[in-house]
Image (tube, rainbow, N blue to C red; front, side, top):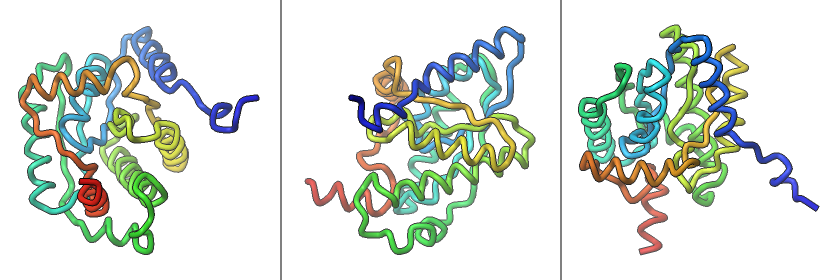
Length: 214
């Protein structure tokens, strides 16, 4: 008998392909606001989606710590967009770095395990801010690069995205970018474009977890 997790597991890559096929059949190139956590994670996603969407990369990551690390990742994101020969032009916008927002959002969850409820809070408020920016810019689709990571649960991220999209009457683009060898391709592209690949997710707590393991 299948357990509950197996029953609710969905093929989000299939959903993504269906959405792409629908737009291709209509001969349209929709606008997409893509939340990006870093250049390496965005590399494969941009290679893939820029064939079918007019993408604006939204760099909103107040969770990244310290500020020097944030600026380093930001510079790498800009570098990749400049260097990558996308079929459709890729635009870029960033929000002001305000780490206090992240610490306020996860207040009381500082000691929770990595990958648990604190991370869900982090995914959720970054996705919600992406949706709000999509509304502001009149962009019909939004999604995130987060599902390319083998350390992140695509089902949880897609459920969050779906609920936020429903709240703001937007289209959330389902994804599981690690599928179809996506994560491995992100490593290949990172090497090709000489991108800095960080060794921790981004926040103070993930850095401390890494330090304890080493």
